[in-house]
Structure formats: structure tokens, C-alpha cells
Length: 277
Ligand code: HEC
Ligand code: HEC
Ligand code: HEC
Picture 1 (cartoon, rainbow, N blue to C red):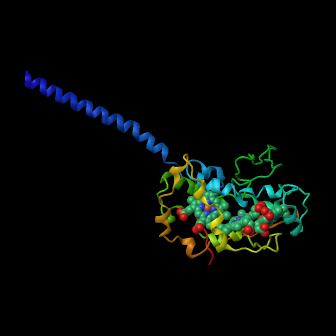
Picture 2 (cartoon, rainbow, N blue to C red):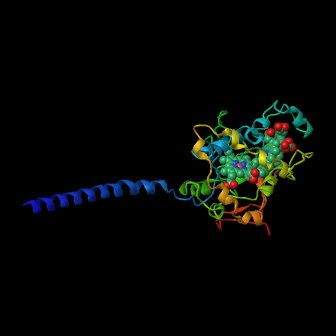
């Protein structure tokens, strides 16, 4: 009897252990799956608020206080009158819907997911203009994606999320994250279409000022120190060796912005980045 009871208890212990294990597997598995998001097939602009999310708050807060985070405000009537006069522009005019300004002063204008100015409408006449919240600069400014993306951040953002930041430069570069910083500034600075003809641009002298994160860490975002940045600094991305193409564009007589063929840095057909020769 004693032996029997001992065996019985052993068996019960065993069963309860198995049940606990099963419960763990059942609860853990769907969770893990739910967290891995599918990488979107086509890149599109998502906006700086999405990059902030739960990952890049110090970068967002720092950026918000730079000219890039306020670039849309400069297009409003009455703002920056002297700079406008110097560029031969009318200080009293509202430029916030002017295609000749939006390419360089907003995010992803005329590209998938990008900024749409007031008055934009779908074919059915529905208002599709981008909502603007003055407290949360987003697609209406020169956002993160204008410097970090070949064609918008939707794809590599998912890679970053799925890996919780533990990715190689090449992993995210495959989905359009770009590392050719000196080249990307020329999307706007010193661009042949710029009305600011007297511009002087110093990449080396200013690259460190685009988001100085050190003073933007708080109690709430202290866990957002990017541990892997140092490791990645040892790697060389393809775009650091050969720069990506840079969009060339013009505004037609009808006031429409068009990208010139063969100048876009991302091929939607090949689903890959396009480099300069
Ligand atoms: C999408 C266009 C765009 C890109 C790309 C871009 N900038 Fe700018 N940048 C602007 C605009 C527009 C302003 C002016 C914002 C305002 O005050 O309205 C500006 C302003 C600046 C300023 C302050 C004004 C000045 O000339 O001193 C600096 C510095 C600067 N950018 C550096 C950079 C660097 C470095 C890069 C590349 C890593 C870069 N920018 C990429 C559009 C761009
Ligand atoms: C090719 C890109 C490009 C286009 C197009 C462009 N800008 Fe700019 N804009 C810049 C850059 C880069 C700067 C910062 C460097 C500078 O001030 O020269 C800037 C600066 C400015 C500033 C000065 C901001 C400051 O803080 O002093 C104003 C105002 C401005 N732009 C208005 C406009 C308006 C209005 C248009 C359209 C008519 C326009 N821009 C078109 C790239 C562009
Ligand atoms: C005007 C261009 C520009 C804009 C806008 C910009 N960045 Fe950057 N970013 C840079 C440059 C240039 C560097 C490299 C800085 C250096 O080497 O000093 C960088 C570096 C970074 C890094 C470190 C990457 C690594 O692994 O080395 C992160 C993360 C980052 N930026 C996030 C952001 C976020 C988030 C935003 C928007 C809130 C943003 N950036 C907006 C130009 C920009």
C-alpha cells in the first residue's frame, strides 16, 4: 500500500508538471507569433510619430526642436520673411500647399504614404489631406524617413520591431534603410531645384546636429538607449560604399511634381534599393 501511494503521488506530480508545461506552451506560443509582424511588400512612408512609438523617443524629441522638425512652419504666410525675401519669395504668400516647396519641406510628398497638403482629395472627392497636430510634428515636417529611408520606413520598421533592435545594418538595408548620410542630404540641400540659391551647406560640420539625443533622455524613455548602435558602427553597409540614387524631379507648368525616370533609390518592381554606378 505504502509503495502504491508513493507511486500514485509520483504519477500525480508528473501529470501536474506536464499540465503546467502545456499551459506555458499554449499561452506563450500565440503571443510570440502575434509579436512577429509581417514585413510589408511595398515600402511606404509612415511618419516620425511611428518612429517615436516605443523605440526612438529621444531622437524624436531632439529632432522636434531642430529646423527639420519645424520645416513646415516656414511655409506659412508671414513666417521667416527675411529668408523668403532673400530667396525671391513672397513673405505674405501661403506656401503650405505649393508643390515647389513640399518636396523638401515635408515627408514623402507625392510618394506612397507621404504628406498630402490641405485640399487633397480622392477620386471620389473624399478629403485625403494629412491631419496636422501642432504638438506632434509628423509627416508635414522633414521627418526621420527623409534621411533614413530609400522609400519610406514601413518595411525596415517591422524588421527593427521583430528583432527588438538586434539587427545587422544589412538586414534593414535590404528593406530600404539607408546609411549614405552625406549623399541623402542632397535630396534637398544644394539641390538644383532649390529656390535658395545662395545656400552654403556643410555636411561634416552639421551632421551631428540633426538630433542631439543626449539631453532628451528622461525617466520614461531611459530604456530606449540603443545598445546595438556601437556594434553596428563596426559594420559597413552597402550604401556606405556606393551611394543610393537621389531623386531628381521637376514641377510641371500645371504645378505637378514629377520624379524623373531612373533617379529613384528604390525599385518597387525588383523590391530592392538602387545604387549609383
Ligand atoms: C527632405 C529634405 C531635406 C533633407 C534630406 C535634409 N535636409 Fe536639412 N533642411 C531641410 C530644410 C527644408 C531645412 C530648413 C528648415 C526650416 O527652417 O524651415 C533644413 C535645415 C537644415 C539645417 C539648418 C539650416 C542650415 O542650413 O544651417 C541643417 C544644419 C541641416 N538642414 C542639415 C542637414 C543634414 C546634415 C542632412 C543630411 C544628413 C539634411 N539636412 C538633410 C531639408 C532637408
Ligand atoms: C530643393 C529643396 C527645397 C525646395 C524646393 C524649397 N526649399 Fe526652402 N529650404 C530648403 C533647405 C535645404 C533650407 C535650409 C537651408 C537654407 O536656409 O538655405 C530651406 C530653408 C527655407 C527657409 C528658411 C528657414 C529659416 O529658418 O531661415 C524658408 C522660409 C523656406 N525654405 C521656404 C521655402 C519655400 C516657400 C519654398 C517653395 C517656394 C521652398 N522653401 C522650397 C530646401 C528647399
Ligand atoms: C536631416 C537628416 C536626419 C533626420 C531628419 C533624422 N536623422 Fe537620424 N541620423 C542622421 C544622421 C546623419 C545620423 C548619423 C549621425 C552621426 O553619425 O553623427 C543619424 C543617426 C540615427 C540613428 C543611429 C543609427 C545607428 O545605428 O547608427 C538613429 C537610431 C536615428 N538617427 C533615428 C532617427 C529618428 C527616429 C529620426 C526622426 C525622429 C531621425 N533619426 C531623423 C540623420 C537624420
